[in-house]
Image (cartoon, rainbow, N blue to C red; front, side, top):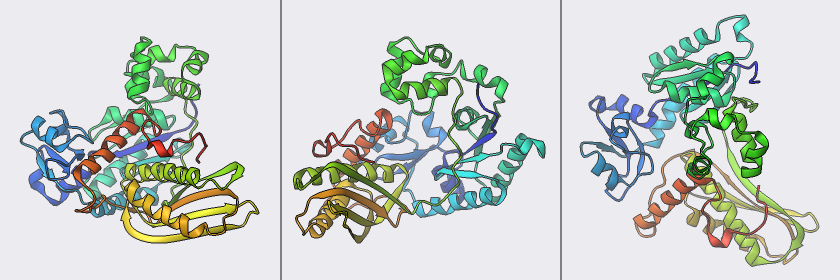
Length: 387
């Protein structure tokens, strides 16, 4: 039912905090919070000691410090984190047959077939020991039949542990776990399933897949498969992402400027959220227009690296106004962000008020819990497909 693949998921434990502890031994064993140092900031990451006091990512710093008065607050250094992430990635690249970098602190490795030559568990243990020895960073891994089960195994192995879930043990491993442990189940889906009396993965697994699809559409089928330990998603060979883009082709060519700008806003909103989720900034913006006669024109501009919608959209709108001079029917529009780099958004002291920053953090938190489309600007909410 599952697969004959062998997939490893590696996750650097409390990565930002672990890096800070490398450079400041006084932080070892102490509750540490990474984030804005004023009480109007928010938590970017925190140590296990702080988590035990109720502190969590995206929490207002004021609340975090009320929950954990003895916490040490450290302003994040994304350049430093990117450097250490790169060290780990290079080790994995040198030793692995096929790997995917899922985020700044997560990797997947496909070891399918390796057991014929060398035990996969032993190989992964040796890799983990080598990473810890070379980087001094704690790292956990899960080893199982696919990406979903491996990731869930890693989460159960933390902190700084390891767990293998062989094919014959997948069901018994998953069954007692809370449905909240399944990747992609956010607060809204969790509450919906809870209202149906579903608490454990075992109960979810026993629901007919047709019923899940009727209640939740295609996502219902995907969630049901994950509850049954089924995930055919391949490990994608790692390539450093150079850019991200979004575009839409219209069924009917248009000159409706207001509608076009609303769609551009929705694109910017979607891409900027992806940037912030990956702890990245963009330093170059491009806008593309394809006219009804298939002539295609692009204009770009370098900017101070940013991930804020309002700053990025201002540039996109200006580029569109300069580019769209021919007053012809438009077939396609698109936006591309390039020159991507790891980093925290630097605040403009005059324009970016704490209220505006906290608004972004609140919206991102809702999106992570309820999905990308859970909260959007009204202007960008048009019934058109954006890819």
